[in-house]
Amino acid sequence: MQYYKGNLTGATPGILPGPPPGGDYYWWEAGAMWGTLIDYWAWSGDSSYNDLIMAAMQWQVGPHDDFMPPNVTASLGNDDQAFWGMSAMLAAESKFPDPPSDKPQWLALAQAVFNTQAAADRHDDLCGGGLHWQIYSVNKGYNYKNSIANGCFFNLGARLYRYTGNKTYLDWAVKTWDWMDQVGFIDNSSYATYDGADSNKACKELNRAEFSYNNAIFAQGAAFIYNATGEPIWKQRTEKLVQYGLKTFFPQGVAVEISCENAGTCTTDMLTFKGFLHRWYAVITQIVPSTAATIAPVLKNSTAAAIRQCTGAALGRQCGFKWASGAYDGKTGAGQQMSVLAAVSAQLIGSARGPVTDKSGGTSKGNPNAGSGGDKGPQEPLRPVTTADRVGAGLVTFTFVALAGGVFAWMMLDTHQGSVK
Image (cartoon, rainbow, N blue to C red; front, side):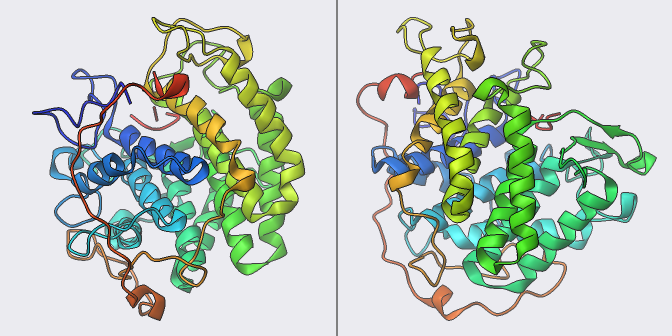
């Protein structure tokens, strides 16, 4: 939290300092950080940061309640928007305190992001379908169709289906998986997940860079679908992705970002990916318990290595990026700290409640047509809201607070080709 300045007078709530050159961090990374802290709360029970999380996420919803605030919309990628939407989805699944009734609700926010991304103007026939990396055609990188933009959409659809039972979300998730298979971004024999390709060249020239979060976002999404449907094909896909991911991204049992770490070419965005890998694999062990015996020992070993190298900077306990080296690598930051926090807090998942649904205790109110009030609406009609969606949630007091006190433990002290910015 020492990197977050949004609670200071004159600063913008919700974001980390940036984007470059004004600071190191793009908008999306703060959305991912709040998700990391929601998981931290859900797994540890420590609510110290909940008011801050609430204020930050609500400040960034934008005028149409779809995480498209005007100050970032012009440079927005589908994955950028989706990371905030996935944090809202996580809040609903975790029973994070519901916002006041006059504020956008977590489930409705996730639905709004999904609906804007399912809209006709986000899709075309290039490469046979799929989302572009960027939202607007004038943006650099628009011609790139990639795994993370489509992986976020797949993941969000899978989780919305499990939470609501609305089959439209499942249909979109299946359609996205099939497209990824068809275009070769997921290798259907090895289960490698490649970064993307130029849509102006029919996606025939694959960028075969492999990033851990591309593997993990599809593995977790597949696990949510299996948990909701019980269909063996989704269990198989989950297991195959995990098997490949453990072999590829945990050499010697410690997380390594293979496409950039050894070469020293990781961007600020990429420094966050190991944290997502740990968090999302941990959740897989909850919702597909048969994977726990395989995944849990590797995550435990990797986390121990992450902790051992948190010996840096002025306090002597801040974290670097190269976990496998066994030593602090000389540079810390929000991404490095966030990733180790994710790994450590995920070790508590065995005693934590799993993600809920609207039938198993979820209280967040939904709106299946959310997002259509802005300039992005749903491509096809969604089914009516469920009875559980209509049930009001218990309200919590919403206050903007300054973070008081010292810094939380060493792990709280002290982006995308791999396709963030």
